[in-house]
Length: 83
Image 1 (tube, rainbow, N blue to C red):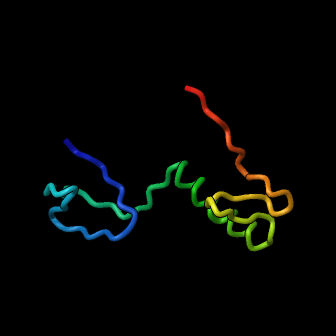
Image 2: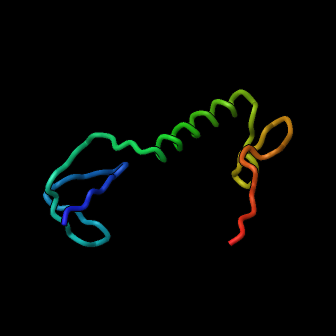
């Protein structure tokens, strides 16, 4: 059965590839960028947060979350989830 694998970096392509210690035969290779919605949102967040940080609008807290510089409120409010 064929399996599609997206490798983001450090790719070496040959006749065979090792995946988790298992030798697999490579049938086809494509170097086109796979774009998914999640990847697009992550990239957009990275670019926008860097720009807003450079303008002094947001700052990163000790807990690695982003906060508004003026109010100190978190950009993404913490919500308690109940199961």
